[in-house]
Picture 1 (cartoon, rainbow, N blue to C red):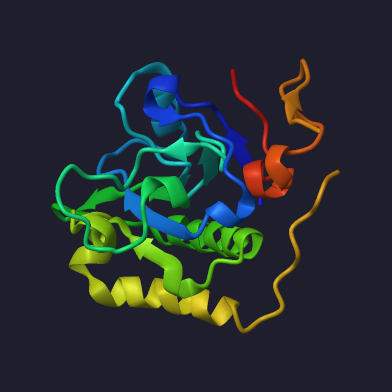
Picture 2: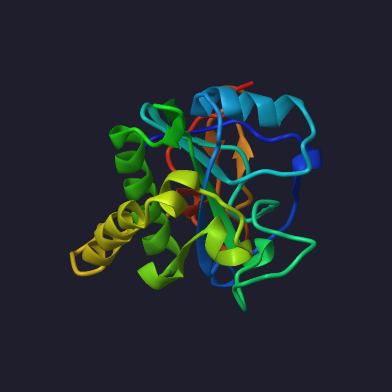
Length: 209
């Protein structure tokens, strides 16, 4: 899977150095807007929202805006947590771009397919079982992702595909042998920090400037 990268503004996440074992949950969101994944990535790069996710997915592919080792602000709350363990500090946030259809937000089939493939990859990278793939709603009871909260059957179908993936032989992520850096062409070079392979941190991506 090709994952393109554009770093979010530093006011939208917390730089960190999480190790592989510290990432225990994947949290699914929606964008609740008409922007594409690329447009959403650009918005997070150029404005401060004090919020972010790690990945944004649409029907055309995947953009990463926060590295996996850093902490995105995507499922925190000043109110009540309804999940006992999942927090920003131990999770990766993934937002699917939603589209307005007949007055309601919906996901296009290709966006869901891309999300399934990304989630499967991250599950494999971090040894996360399907039971730890959650909706934002499951953590704070915010109605997000709207299509998977309003249509529980759609969420169960998504989860079933992840359960099925766990019963198949998944390809192992590519492992690369020193801190990650970008060369002048904007491509990943070197080795991931803190024992995380570039595959897990970045996928196969280019930084867009």
